Amino acid sequence: MVLVNGAFIDSVKANDRGLMYGDGVFRTLRIVNGVPLHWERHYLRLKRDCDAIGIVCPEIECLTRELDAVHGDCVAKIIVTRGVGARGYLPQVCSEPTRIIMTSPLPAANFREIRAHLCTLRLSHQPRLAGIKHLNRLENVLARSEWREDDVPEGLLLDIAGNVIEGTMSSLFLYSSGGLIAPDLSLCGVDGVQRERIFEFSSGNGVPMEIRSFGIDFLKQADEVFLVNSVIGLWQIVEIDGMIWQKGPFCENLRNWLQ
Image (cartoon, rainbow, N blue to C red):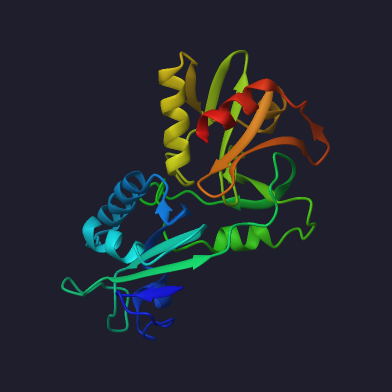
């Protein structure tokens, strides 16, 4: 199913700024029995990201009505672009945003422990866009093209300074010595809903949480390493290019809590 501005069509205008410049933001979430999981959280993130780049976010009531057309279990992607505009980078102040809702089947593979690829691509630094789920995802596309093994579902991304940041489509966490460690996303990376939920788990269950910059050597010393997003849930990493971690109990307990 594809909805563009509330209509069942599957195309946008050629001069939409989302197409021309990646000028927009998006969210991806699970639909279970027709119900979008954690919808209010996703909407607040969508609005935050729209505000950060100066796009008028559609009202939650509008998007909720359009999501009501989705039935069953699936993945929904919500895109908001700045809308149709004239050629040139300068955005028109009064342009009407374009909203797109599209659905796809849930992933066929149900991984719990995974091997991951260490990407050679390095994320650039741009504090103005750090944390935002914007449409400029060419870095992720190039990183994901580095491997094609079916049993390696995700890759790990570092920034240009060698700091571990995230997966190509997921947020990264370490569990070490009884506490959680999350990468610093002040220069790059995506700050998603599941990352927010992990922070809430930490504060509500007495598990210390630290946000910091760290490299591969620090990653190697962790007791457990895992990835989360709103579609996959939680994947525990057991190997990255020869680096091995044992399956641990913390990830299993956290997976149950997230579900």
